[in-house]
Image 1 (tube, rainbow, N blue to C red):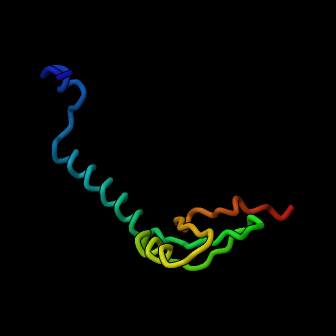
Image 2: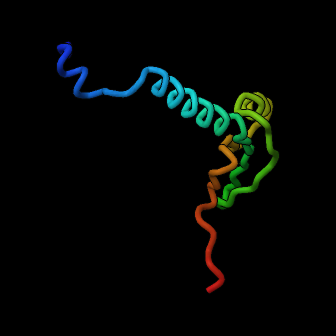
Image 3: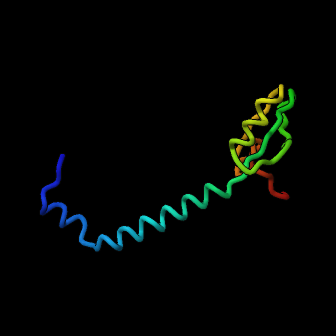
Length: 90
């Protein structure tokens, strides 16, 4: 459904330059956030326990290492822990 000129002017009344700056800032933050993510190669034992085996700078590097080993292994971002949340000291 196409918007007519009156609808467009009611929905956006800012400067195209401001919109471009906002878009650039959002793009910069999202691309830098994904670039700093490290990846961890995890091994799962038959008992169900997990062990961090090795860390990598990119998902591609982790998956390349995954191709060369046998067993129950997986690659996850360093922000994900397959062991679940840590318990509090209580």
